Image 1 (cartoon, rainbow, N blue to C red):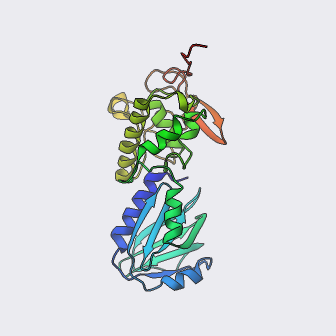
Image 2 (cartoon, helix red, strand yellow):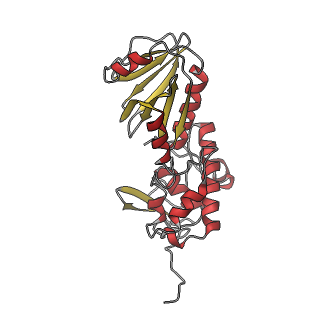
Length: 276
């Protein structure tokens, strides 16, 4: 599933291409046709994201609310637009650019109240300037759930997916099964700041790179990673491969239906020092 940096980058691209322009709005597939007709020919106000949600705003506090899900794509191309190919649920176009949405699990026309409710239901997004990390910390410090589970809970922190989850925990030498309530505020603050930096870089480059300079392929004399997710990472989808830091074999396990990845040497199991 696309992580938050993908949606932020997409919002920025849509903003740059269409904001202030009168756009044609259509649904070649037909599933969004009635709502598209209400927006067709209107001036696009702007695009924004919150976590893994995308909002395309039109006059009158109307928003197209999009969630890409596992396979959704929303691709921009230089115009003029050709005849649509495949299941295009939504097309936005002007004279210079067109954008086709395919495979999304959600594409709805909503009003301001629903827009605000969706954002209020999410945890702070590291990519939003209005993010308040103390909201996330208030939930984490009270929870006995594993930090690896909490980081994927969109009501705790919005926009973090499995790649950023695995990688930020490795970078902070934290086992993914460590209970949230055992973290110190400074540890959480460091993780949050790292997520902000990593995800901002992901917006800039369009890929997830998490390794420090000394662990890049060039610095280590190793081949670049080959994976359809792209990017240089420490543990994500590297099961059985040697850790780039210590050489131990990367491990994996399932937690709440998602795969965990960690290094047993760099991320040892947490042992409480509490006196019983």
